[in-house]
Image: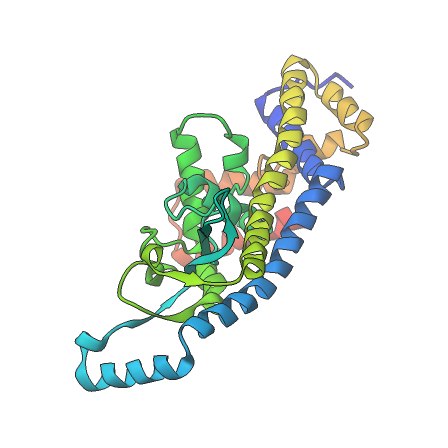
Amino acid sequence: MPKIRMNTEYRNKLYNRIKDVFEKEETQERQAFMEARETFTELQTHTFDVARAVIERAYPSTDVATLRHFKKKYGDPCDVVAKDKCFYFAHNEDYDEDDNQVETKSHFDFGLFGNLNGNEYSGQEDTEHFAHAYYREELKAQGHNPDIIAQQSGKDSNPHKTKHIDANNKFLGKSNSSYDDDGNIGMTKTFNEPFHLDVIGTSHCRSRAIACTKKEYELFEQWRVAKANVVSKHQTWIDSITKQTDQLKIGLKAYRYLSEGIELATELGIKLDEAELVRTNSTGLTIYNPSNLASMIKGMKNKNQTREDKIKARLNYEKQSVN
């Protein structure tokens, strides 16, 4: 049998099959990412329970109910109670070198796209990186690229990167405005909803520092570090895959024959069938067996067909492709 020459389609097939295996391998980097995500999820609920106690201590439910009563009675002038998921917590149990009390405060956001560093105006990309990594499997299942920010780390903004980030955010239901929490839908709304609490005051949260103990504050910081760790571990894992796939691209580009790519996969412990690669198109459908190919060619002919005939022909083709 003559050797099959390598071409762009075969290179892409080999690259995607091997890359998929790289992503599913139980490496130390992947395990560290999965554990970081689990740790954050566990801390999120526990930390919010503590936050709830702090908020209700500052804004008793009886006061909230009274103010809501007055709002109902007098309208907007008494509209001072609102739901929020981000809070400035502060404690003053530390002292400076002159033995003066020092206030320590920071911003803590329990939302999916909440900041990772205590600055409510922190870089948007970090918050998006967390959200995409947290829902990585769901995004992958829909054909999106949840690793785009990690893959493009250190690179300037570009249309390719922006396209994938926007697609991820849209799938997750992120509001177009970081200040419009009500605009969130879908998975973002579902994630955020359990973490809203009643607060009193008409000003933004940055000017509404809520007193807590140092121990409570340290727990909030531990939770935020766990959130940032999801991003850090995800970046490390994707970096390790990128290094491998960069070398993979170089090797596949140099190969002249498909058999060389198959041999590479075999050496990597990945079993691929040359015949299967040849007879499938880029989407994996088998099109080169005579029956399927004939059906496809017939469908290209200009002839009068009813809408029902076209649907029937397409269903038959897809059924044959699966079989």
